Length: 480
Image (cartoon, rainbow, N blue to C red):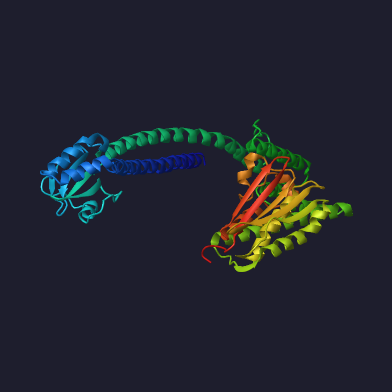
């Protein structure tokens, strides 16, 4: 188990770092290319929109040795154009054939016919940007009495490639360092987690074998510490029970096996109370009724868990069919309010309903949406002290409706808010069980809202209350 957990944590941490750095690297490389591309064309437009340069080029095109004079004019602006004769060059081309007439580069005859040169031959400015190409270019047509010409600037992107290469090396170095740190941290984390779990496993094995001489001891206040203290308490109770047994060795072994099994089963409470009723025929009637009530309550809770698990498994398998149709969301909200009013009044809650705007009819599954709203209100009732305030408000914007349920209940710690939609997650586990909660209601609600292409959000402050808001698109899911 130790090696398995170590390897899993190391693998996960390394995979996270690798994925993160890959995404960041790809993003940075793409941004560098986009920046240089945008900067090139912006700089070209700024320079060539200079009226003085344009007038000089057109004047040169009307005189003798037009191509030579035009090249000299462009050379005067080489600093502004970024001409360096290494990665970026300028040319004066024939406006009819695209042949090179002069410039700063070494090409003779004709350059490769790019889309911008073709555009300029057609008499229009060529500022077409091709991000996947290994060059950047602009082509500007100039017409004069001596003929048609093209001022052509081309950059071979060598600067971009050099910077990208340097950036890749930096990212690679950062990745290697990140992988080393992730491996170290994951090993430390695994050791921190595995040590107490191994100790508890050995203790459970000893208890299963009937040895109660050693108990694990962790002074931490985290979940492992709580689990250890709970285990020690249960082991102590089991030891006391075994010490009271006077039956044969065979019965004792069977009892140890049964109790050890109880430590590993989710129906500990039901089995414990049922065994007590079976083994004691002289219990007072009231005690028997109390025990049976606990058994029924725990059975109902497990039934709810099984039902909710079945619902979630159907969501996961995609086997739940929704009945999407247009219906009155205002009526659905009102129906939920009326159905929950009596439950709220039983706890002396002030329960209100308010529509901020007119609500349009929406496309959705009426029954499923009502299920979501009932879950929201039910949670508010359960986790608000008697005499509290609960309100439902609803409204609409251009393409969606929203419904909020607000209470002034016990609230949820800030660090727990992101986890409330996780399956089986309960902030106050003891209180949730007392109220019949399974820890699956909000998970189911989220699945339903997601299937409607809606959103669900929760805002809460400990001791102040909770607000949960859902939105549903008026026209329903996109595929509908």
